[in-house]
Length: 339
Image 1: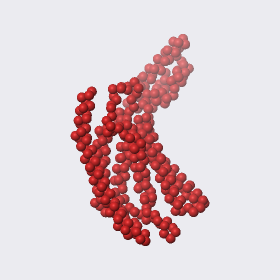
Image 2 (image 1 turned 30 degrees about the horizontal axis):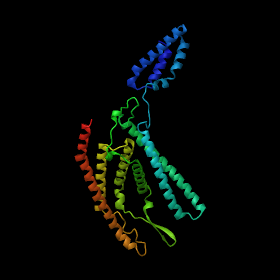
Image 3 (image 1 turned 180 degrees about the vertical axis):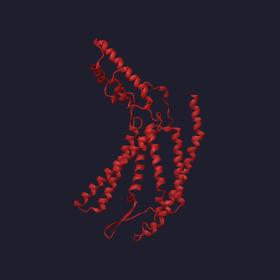
Image 4 (image 1 turned 135 degrees about the vertical axis):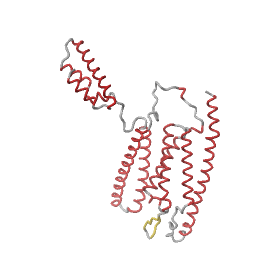
């Protein structure tokens, strides 16, 4: 045995998983020795150190050689990258829109000259970059975790050789998706998450008093205590819509997931309806004339809207479950008979 070959094979083994080392080291050693034997016969000269060096250079460094026997390693692999890129663009667009709205409000209240506006604009740009980097970092972390946890078959791509036209399915009208509507829904939901969680001041009531803008909060502490639950439902809604965009159609698991989300949303709306008012009673008290009227009417209007939301979503939930439990099996049976 040549000590240079031994050192080369041992170094390759350092880059391989322990359970693969023995078999692959034996295979690589055999490959190197066969290559040396073939070159020796072709050049009609015995194997020497110079020939060993030439052959090992041909094979490449130990790290490069080991990489040929390892599966590709991704932080975010091809399965999830299209979905990641779609969500990233949506998030950046929403962050940009929210930053522009916030900048507009701030300029209208604090800037009376170009000299006052420039620092505000510079700080807004810095805040946007910081927020965008933080959001992208969190997204990369989340998708990297999904890359490791998701089974290999989930979201896997089918090669041209494996594709079979018989796998095509005729989509019922109710299973088709409207992509513009889904994208708009994701954008609006992300905007709601950002505004309610990070820029709640945008929701305040603003009015002129003595030549100055005055801001008065509208939402009460009761609402913000429920905000984590509401935000959780919004995030799950975005995940569901992103999966729909990726798959291109509704499936039975997505339908049932949607039912669960709707039921949870009804539960949160009921909690808001039956609990303390989510509108501050003194939100408009500073207004000279209509303040008391608005302060008395707004909580009633909000409770009425919550009641209607619970009622209408409850009816829709019952109809959806009926279609899934009663009507859907009949559709599936008809489809099976048509095969």
